[in-house]
Structures are given as C-alpha cells and as structure tokens.
Figure 1 (cartoon, rainbow, N blue to C red):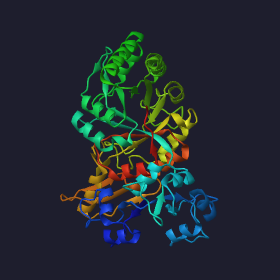
Figure 2: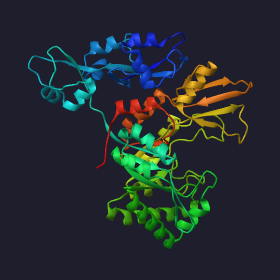
Figure 3: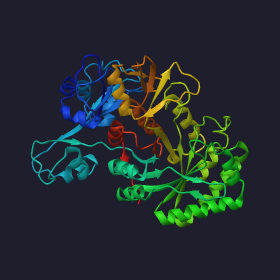
Length: 470
C-alpha cells in the first residue's frame, strides 16, 4: 500500500489517476465521508499492491532490489522523483509489487512453490474467483512474506458496542481484553458485562483476556493496591475469584493492570505476579501485565517505581508497554504517543527482557485542547476520523511533526477560541509498525476500541500476518 499526503489543490480524482487505482477504493479504505473534501496535509492510504522501504545508511538500489526481489528499473520507475545515485537515509521509497506472468500449463500450486508462498495467499491478493482458472499471460501479484505478530485490543465499551467492534476487526486480533474487573479491598471483583464481547471474540478466534485493575477514572487506587498486595490471604482470594470468572466465562488468560502502586509495594506486586503464574499456568492459562512507560530502572514517580520491568519480563508470559498518554487530557497539548519517547521505553524494556515478550502500546484516539492551555483544563477525546472531520470543517492544514511522528493542526472555533488537535493517521501508524519490525517485538496492543480508525486496520493487515492462538 501507498501512503499519500494531500498537497494544496489536489483532488481525489487526481490522486487516483496518479496511482492508477479506482477512486472509490480510496474512499472506502479511508472511510472518507465526502471525497470532495480533502485538506492539505491529510494522509490517505492508497490500496495499490506494493510496499514501502525507508532508506538506511549503506543502502543501494541494488541491495534494496535484492531484498524485495524486484528489478532496479522497477524501483526507479515507481519513484521518478528520486535520484537513484543520491539515496538519503530516512527517505521512503515505494517498492512495486512482485508480479508473475502465467505461462502455458502453469498451476497456482507451482507458482506458489516458486515464490515460497501459498495458493490461498495468491488467490486472496489477486481476488481470484476460481483458483483453477488462470489464463496464460495473466499478470499475478505475488504477496510478499510478512512478519507474524500478535495483536491485542482493550475496550471499555458497553457489552453490545464491544461485540460490534469485534465483529468488525476481530479477524485482526489475537487477544481481546474488556477493561476491566476492579479488585476491591477485600479481594472480591467488581463485575462487568462482557458476555456478548467474549462470544464475539471466540467466534473470531480472538482469545479473551481477562483484565483486572486497582483504579478507576476517579480513584488512583494506591491504597487499594497496598491493602490487596501486602496481604497473602487477599492475594490468594483475588486469584481464586479470577479463576472462577475465567472458568465460568471462557477467558483464557489474565492481564494485570495495577497502577499508582506505592513504591514500597513493588516487591509485593512481584510476588503477586509469581503467585498468579503458579496458580494459572497449571490450568493452561497465561499471565500478562501492563507496564507504565519507563525509560530506566531508577525512574521516579508513583506511576513508575513499583513497575519492575526485569521482574515482570521474567515472571509474566508477556507485557504490554503503555506507550501513550504523553499528551494527557489534563495537561498541555502535545503528541499523545510520540515515537521518540516510545522508542526510549522500548529500548529500556529490551535491556531487561526479550523482544518476544513485548507488546507495543498503541493509542487510537485524538485529543483537542483549548489554547492557550489553562492548568487542569480537560481536552476533548475522540476518534482520528473526527479529527480529520474537524480539520475539514475549519479549513485547517494538517501538519506533521517529524520528531514525534505525529500529525496535528490548529483552528479557531465559532466562539473565537483557539484549538490544537493531536491525532493518529496513516503515517504515524506506519512509524509504529516499523518500530515493531525493527525490534522484532511480539506485537501491538491497542488502547482502546471504540474510536474509528480505518487506516490503521488496513495498514496493520498490509504490514503483518496476525497470529491466532490455538
């Protein structure tokens, strides 16, 4: 797929003509409400077979062509604005699709074997109605091998809305985690309505993962965490109650999201995780945790100190790095998930645990702050789709911050108030997917379903093969 950034004066018809694709396909994959309303700086996913390559130091056209199995001439023709003798690191090249012309007597099975792929993959890539009917001279797009990852998604939607979200994108999920069962001071669990969501997840072969937490939107949960983690009896009771829910409802694993834990309770938290593994593993259940975005073992602050990266990485089956919320709803406007900060967290995590245990946290919402910012004033949270709609409504040009790899824009509303919006688009999603590939991470974890973001799901499917647990 191609990511195209709209320039001043460009129309969707011109963009479709440039890439020789059907205009309606661009409308559909980006869920554009009005194809006649584009804004400068808006990124569009163009459904054209192929991939992109970000030039690195030492790259040559020959080495890039070898890597993707295409001719040098095909790359130069696909990138007419790029000087083949001047390849600048950081520049993105479009790599055209690998194609095969069917010869007389060839079967799909032979072609698939030749390129190390499967018949089904070729059928899907070319939307073949009958795989036994391919004609001599037909040009087939050969799908490239994609890295396989796991994908989790949290949601705090209602049971009905969560089920609808799963029905839409559950084929792209390995795990699905309704958020969350709150642990009470006596070790009981505050229930949630999740029956429809679990059923939808199972129907999509997405593993239901039970989430427990100590906090709410109005309670930090520090005292609750201390009471439950410091008591061996309550720790046992919590896990007894967890197992009862899992056995009854069909959950296959546990995710612990204990936040604002007092620094003095750090070892108690580690002990709780070990106890969870000791009790859940014999029953075939897995254990995971959600970790605050730390960049060092000595990082101070209530959110970070009790999260022992080394211990969690050693004890749990995997961890979710909560690499978001720099652009906090009560703080000043800034990128919510800046890639430069996310990278520091990932590199610290990799220093104490293997990459196959790490999920990169990925937020899929936008925020709109009033400006100038007043301390304590809350930003509005909504979907990336709504962010683009507002840019269109107010005629705002979308800018892209290359340091944080995040789009943003500013506008003035009908009351004369200034606004600054930070959100996610195709470019920021691709930057995160590239980081997952660079560090060979286990996968991606979304926070949280309920915010429409069609570009993300199209790119996720284009970049990766999604693992399904048996």
